[in-house]
Length: 336
Ligand SMILES: NC(=O)c1ccc[n+]([C@@H]2O[C@H](COP(=O)([O-])OP(=O)(O)OC[C@H]3O[C@@H](n4cnc5c(N)ncnc54)[C@H](OP(=O)(O)O)[C@@H]3O)[C@@H](O)[C@H]2O)c1
Figure 1: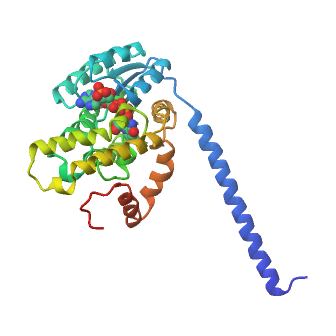
Figure 2: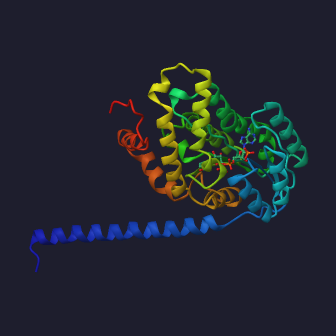
Figure 3: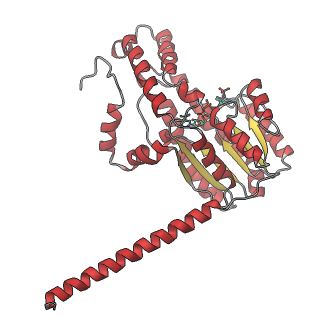
């Protein structure tokens, strides 16, 4: 037998129990629904898809995967060698040009419009470049070079292909990075370019939603590609460029060559140990291109879904502490 208070407590427990069960059941139904929904794909055979950055890495994988699905892939490459490899992987057309050359981008876009008869299913902006280095020794033209490929090229190419994308009610896929949501030290030009592409994607998504064109963003964590392999050794290129431009600058006492050598060696090893299979990013891009209900954002790879997602959401004062720990060894003159 319950007393009056005991009965009231029991009712509260029962209500809370049923509410929790109800919420769990709704979550389970939602999960099943989302899983089934994400599996339904468009047949993209015969559809035109443009991919940039196809000489190597993620872009190269995307060309192979989409060609296997029967898409007519325009594989935009940097080099002649890259273009022949892309053709061998099944690309219908593989122009090679410098994406930082506006005239070349306009010319290729015009040819794509003609070839596709003005109906383009998707453009995947996969090309990217990185010039790492700490801000003290980053020449200003390195920011411009990185922005040219990672930001201005996708902006111009998208604009020149918009009418064809609208006609097909197609989609735009922008390959950003985890650095597009969490900026890490030693890579400011790249981080800035990826944050810029995120802001562009947000605006573009709303504007294109009125004509049925979708926009997805891909945020890969570190993947085993030529870009990641050369990341830490490339610090030296930046350091050398500043040493040539400003040999007497006091930046060298703050960031001496002896420190640089240790920094590159230690971190290159660490990066190799965390780099993931680029197939994770390739699969997410293929999903964004083919799914009936593509996601707005794909966090590609284990570290993107865990560490970087947490860093993105946590208070900035906490993530600052973590980011400071990533600078190892500390430059000799750092005060704290
Ligand atoms: N790998 C990672 O850890 C990682 C992580 C996050 C995000 N991402 C992003 O994923 C995308 C693909 O990178 P990835 O890892 O596959 O690296 P990747 O193998 O170096 O691919 C980048 C591609 O862009 C091309 N490219 C660079 N500058 C160009 C220019 N001026 N004109 C035309 N093409 C140019 C490169 O051509 P060349 O090979 O001939 O230079 C290469 O084909 C990039 O947007 C990158 O920022 C990569």
